[in-house]
Length: 145
Image (cartoon, rainbow, N blue to C red):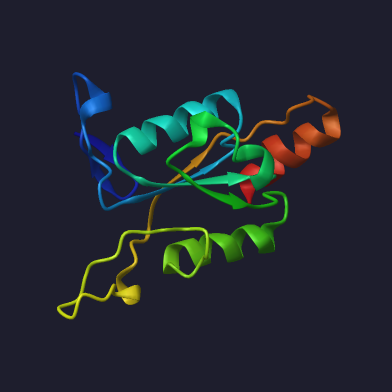
């Protein structure tokens, strides 16, 4: 085990792709349409996470096969208020794009109150152009948000 901020982190060795460590957990990935972000989305989906991909444009992102299995949520990560609102909605299960797993009640209905929290938030943010103002806005400020 490794020591993380919130406590011990289990170390899994071997064929990690077949290890379903994320079942019942939610992973949110910012910058999910970039090279590293797409790989993170694929890995989270493969590991069983309820994967939420934050994207600039859901229409464009919906045709990206690397994002299949993830819920696409349009978000301007440079807008701190929008980002906070969306993350709160995802965590509460009230965001309409997220099909978060919920436990079933005895009457067969889904329990909306027991939506899983956001267990992992991964930032793969990087400016696509490298223009100085964009580097500051995305690589620094959006990551800070």
